[in-house]
Image (tube, rainbow, N blue to C red; front, side, top):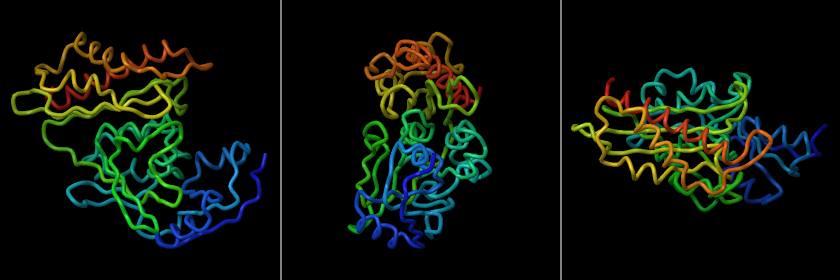
Length: 295
């Protein structure tokens, strides 16, 4: 199938892009890599009279140290993240999640901001942003603002972005000593959306206790979400020796225990997804603990 007819706009600045979005209102949609939007348009699952292409917009591509964190432009491709030694060193969780996204052809076009703004419940980046407490930068005709990842993903394919607001970049905290990161997901085939997955970021204090823990879940609800009960359960606990299998399993159990909107579909029932999700949390937790512990 072919998409419905639309007018194509190619702004070259953030100001021009947000002005177009404000002028055109809900008849316009911003498009970056198009790896989610184009198939939906082609299948006529959605339609917009205007598409605002962000590929030529200056200042929203690349990454750099900024305000104590690592800033990643929204239009930065996933393949650029995947190839970056700097991202691998400073934001390892983002680097480790990237190869799990689709296939390399998709990552060559797909963007960091596109994935976050699309907010697919089974996508990796929203869970990574939650686990790391990333900050999302936006622009609109009213100015700029910074939104915490917590609360940004409000439901199925919905976010805290206003219609005339553009995601311009994301600021991730830089990895420090005694930190550990891991992402685990289960999919029926490599490149498929995950049936269930978890991204874990932890930091240990000098005594080997958990000083901070962020656990992002994906594929386990209408949107990416944090396993807050599990985060509270492990806060301040000692994880000497890298953590036992039993302790990891308990973190996984708690991590999914309170989920009440797990989908059931042809890929598995809600109960099945919760079991898989618990296993993904446990595996990611144990890997992150071992890295942070230096084991």
